[in-house]
Length: 360
Image 1 (cartoon, rainbow, N blue to C red):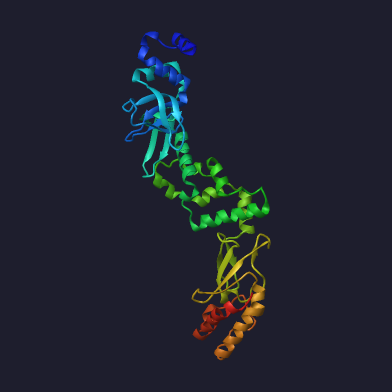
Image 2: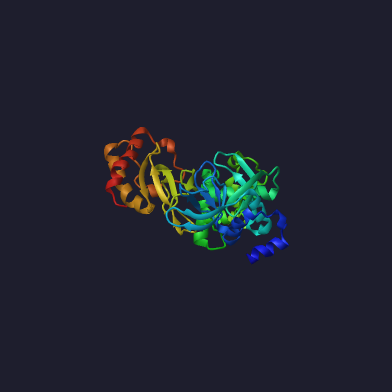
């Protein structure tokens, strides 16, 4: 009561306080986290602390929109056992007496239906009192909108092309093997640094569809210095040159990285292909001329010495007039794929039946 008397003499006009409002005001000031408002289209109430509550069916306060609660029954469901109705005038007096209970919050972002939302809310704790649309956003507010959206939806909402996925995987390998001089590109780290690498590329984005136009690869590369970009291409190249003269793309999204290449294009490649100064061997997917899988190996020299010898012998027996190469590791680097006639192609297909029975 002393607190109320002090507040009424210093912050509001006593003439505006109704005697009927005093019990509810006292309860609201004593228990500000127990102020409740009836939910829209619901029989329950929302407390200012964010919890839900209910009145018993026998309560005399079922029609009240606002309540100041004195006693709650806590359990799986919270029931209001003792409360007083807060009239609109009492609520107005409460705002004058205790303005610290009221706050203003700005909500900016995209709703689930894709529509943009920009509103300013007046609240009493977790209870929303009113909302007003924001007519125009500043550049900072737009950036905050994008950041909130991405923090909520995650990086999967970005357009990840194959190149962008590979770049992210290459940068992750560089960070793993070369140390902290290389940026951490885990999802957690990237979400924490959105303002540094991504938001600058969304400075003019005003629609959700603008996100689909984002060049995620360019945004990721902004985390690297020019020197690091050059070094990344040396340590973890996007392609590997093979003896046939082709440049075969390396798939870094798989662990270990995968090189899927036609078997005949590797004739003459003696060593095990690897990246990162030889520290990360590639997993070789050897393919038929029709790009069907023949063999998967992490030890290409072993394959030439063992598995391929059995394959070549089988080819020689079945198609003696069109023998396959007996020493493919010494084959010329200018191997002409057009020289493979149909019988030779069928020889390659024999490896399909051998590979399941040969231990690499």
